[in-house]
Image (cartoon, rainbow over all chains, first blue to last red):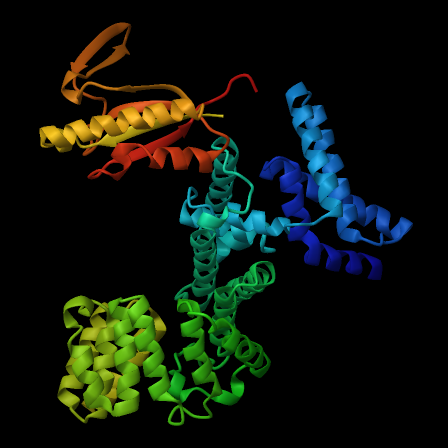
Length: 404
Length: 119
């Protein structure tokens, strides 16, 4: 029993790497590689307890998977493919000695290739690099398993038939493509973090997978922006237990019990932030820096609001969107008082009149200024366009307060 | 690996172009075609007459029916194509991006891998 558990552990740790290398060995054929890896794991399960665990389990698994893949191709008996497989096996042999590029890097760039639809990128990334089954991914995105399975089949077929290369992009494209990979990882995280439907367990699972992928990006690229993204996800996720009440109601940042924040995770992120901020910080690093200031503040009142406002100002210069302008205005309100924030928020009406958080932020400042009637009108406007149940309940509570 | 690059744009854009701009556009195509011939990517390529010359043919119950016009009325029309040889989709994409119409008006290039029946 214990041996089997130890083998399971190796699988979990090595699955993505073994698969990534096997896909390369199989000339980018995802299906062939997945099947071969499956068989290699099955072989390990029966042989390792008898023969002992090899010194280099990953190398062993890649070797066996490669042989299984070649067997499969031979069974398909097509001369050209055997030649291709033999070319590939030469490549594999050289890899075993000089691991120049981690194959997981090839895998992640291929999964997040812009020629694949965004939903397909997410599904493929979770399926191959993450440890999720098709059923789990379907559950997480509230779609039918057959729909998700078909999405994966289509994506893999496109990779094969349109010949999306299994490579790390060349230098001239690397920055842009890395940005796209990070966007996919952050999307997975937000789906887990901000999902308004679905059951709790699945949401946590997505956050955990996104953080795992974030760690992988840091490990593989060692880029400042990857560290920013990882820090940002760790910091948001550190508040998971304090964000909602037991009954699923929303708890605002200022009202959260900060002793329930995950300190270990915060510490890990705080160590990453200064590195992420070096050399012209990107947007993830700036957002991580903002989250880090929240995480370091003992109370909401003791938060370094001037610094947060300055960081949002910087972010706004990079990404001039109305939603960031709204966050900037709220930070200024926390720093200089509600009146200063309100002027800025009112200036955004043209762009955000349909956005419930614009109305909610306005309502909150009016409430703080004791302009209750106007606050009530703003809360009603927010309720008219809110989507999620917990947010609706929160706004209704506030509305009741100002109309009492 | 062969890819078909289908060139879509609004015919109106061409109709409203000045004589000088048409000249430049044409010269850009000549240059591009020459370049991909020199780089051995070119297999074939043509410009098509405008869609008002198109005829759609279908056979129903053994009878051939011809109708005036393209199969699908779309905002952009198929105006030409290149058949190229490229090592993978990334290379095909780079070549497609160099087609003059890719950067003009609402022009777009659709890349379709050619099916290989010898495999």
